Structure formats: structure tokens, C-alpha cells
Length: 319
Image 1 (cartoon, rainbow, N blue to C red):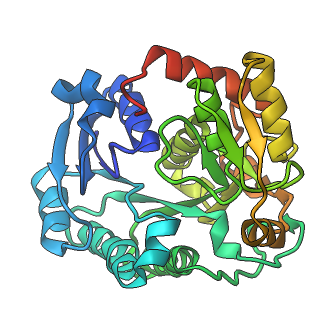
Image 2: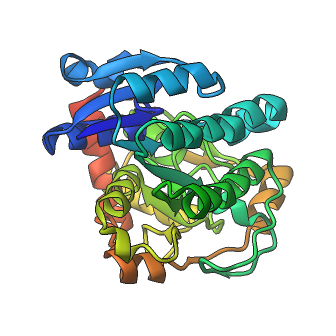
């Protein structure tokens, strides 16, 4: 099968590309700034297209010229850049996804798998979020993702594009390019790499998290599900359970690396933002029921152990 992965040299996309190659797919990677170090081992097996999602012609040409049958759409500006330039975020995250959906409508009707985010629910949501919890995003990143969720559902009903969506909880993994406010990624990667890390929040701060390999597995799982199984269309997918605090992550890191240098210097503004997000349970019952979702990394210690193995075995991928 001809598979297009947008954002395909990101830390999730590169892992997904390897998995799809192992399944025998022909993989095309579309990225605005390809990180070829991260895919050095598979460069000869994939086609890399450098392009901008906001440029419709580049998206259309890639889908049409490569006979794409499945689009795994991970490409997007992340939260901090979106806040720095909401106008660019509109072009890339919203209109860029319109371009992907239009390409699917116009050229062969490939399946489109979209990666959304827990950020669509915004602040002051409550402690438990289900697939039908009302969304009130407060960031440009969340607003754009929420809009595209609904647009994709429209393309599915109006134009019969096989649109499917997974809402990811906060994703952690080696090489993540954006440190979340709660800093769950930095507290693992830097100490495991022998560098000190200072947390800007208190140890009790919690945010639902999942490992990057589970994010890729969720994309694969919903993509491979039979068409008739997809009823909800847009699904929460969770990972580590119960939701860990940053203190829990610290303890897991120190079980692997006792001399890890981790300190705390809480920033009141960041603490206030972090504690305003009250979600503790990211309910993914529909995904489990309809297409058999089950994360492979449900325990903090399993995540940290694999995180360390990735850093040790592939140091050049995650710089």
C-alpha cells in the first residue's frame, strides 16, 4: 500500500514509518524541514518530499503523483509556535489539513488518519474527559485541532472521505521538539542523557501522558480497523495509567539512574497554568470497544526503561 506520512521525520512519524515499512508498505514522507538523521537507517527505503502543508499544490501533487492510498496526518505546528504566530498556525494546521482532505477528495479517496489532541478540551474541563465532553479550547493549537476534527467528520459524511481521528493525550518520548508546560519529557530525557533538569512546576502536577510508540500504535490501530467498526470517528486514546505526577516520573527516572540531577524551581505562572488543567482521567473506552485500542506502555517504569533504551541505542536520532 502507498502510505503518506505528513510530519514523517518527527519522533512519532519516523517510528511509524519504520513500522509501515515492516508491514510491506511503500512509504512517502512529507515534511517541511526533514530531519534526515532521524530516518538515516531507512532513507534508501522511503521517499522524502520536502513541502509545506499550507501550499495546496505541494500536497495535491504528492498525493496524486504517488498514488497515495492512506494518509497518516501527523504534520502540524506545535503549541508554542502556534501561540507565537497564530496566523501561521491557521495556515499550516487548519488550511494545511483542508489541503490534505481536499487531496483525498480529489485524488483516489485515500483514507485520512488525523492526530488531534487533549488540548481541544482546554482548561477547567473537569477531572474526567470522555469522547463527548464539550470542547472549549483556549489555545490556537487546540482551537485549530478542534475545528479540523469537525471538518474531517463533515468530509466523511459529505464526500465519503474515510476520515478517522485519534485524540492523543500529552505525548512523551526521546527527541520531542516541544517541552510541555508540565515538562514530563524534559525530566526524563535530560537526566537520562547525563544533564541536569530543573522543573518549573511542583512534583504533584499531573497531565495525562502517553509514550510516543503508543501514539504511533494508535494511528496504526485506527487505520487498520474495519470500516464498519468506526462509529465514533473521533476517539480519545490514553496511555500511562493511572495518570502520573511529575514526581512519579522523577522517581521512575531515579530507579533507572540513581544519580539523576533533578531540581525544582516552581514558576508561579507556569504552576498556575498547569494546575488549571484539571484532567486526571482521559477516558478512551470507545476506542477500546470499537477497534481494540490498548496501549503497550501503561506503566511509568516501562516508559522510562524504553526511553533509556532508545537514547542508548540511537543517540543520533534524538539530538
